[in-house]
Length: 268
Image 1: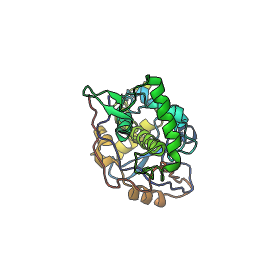
Image 2: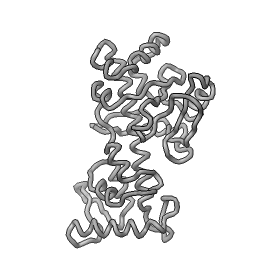
Image 3: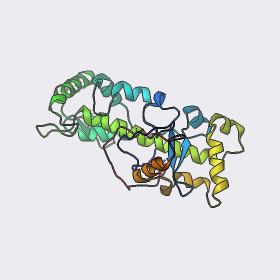
Image 4: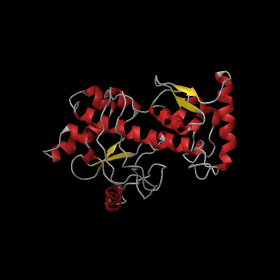
């Protein structure tokens, strides 16, 4: 199952303040205690991050098209620093919506056939040799890329574009999973298996339900539940540093799609 319309309003520049909580990034092992901010109850509130164990217990359909290990092996950084071209090419052999976006940018290499599959645009060699030529081109083209946008010769983006897209999409889909988990946990507060695997999120959600009579479980995945960058910053600044919040935003463009908050729908 795929997220058809993604949460795009939370890609922001890094921000750090003193405290113990933070807005999680793709570096899962480094920010396991980080929060996911929600405005489901009407005001910005931090909820604990749902682990993969919790996501499974609350029956959240996987949204990410690659795990964090695959992501960081191919692209340790969104600007392609230390990028592994072999791993990037391996990921491009996958079949998913993200890879479709990448291949669509590489019209000189990939062409979409009438049946929806991808073919080599101009390579009559064996498939393995075509991939080898593509990797060689990426390595050669990297020097001509300006911050991962387009090559100086006017050609398509190279690996910087790929790494930025991989990171941005991983983050967006991770957030989608978190919000699905919040709704699932809310609906399973009487299920000890779920609340146990997801502790302390169940208690946090119960407190929100107790304090907001109009709050329903579906509100956690509504567009209005997604706070803007400005709202999160305001919350962070207003939170005492003794119990504080440390918001480490995702490594992404400085401000992207602020205010573009779309409802998430699960496609077939």
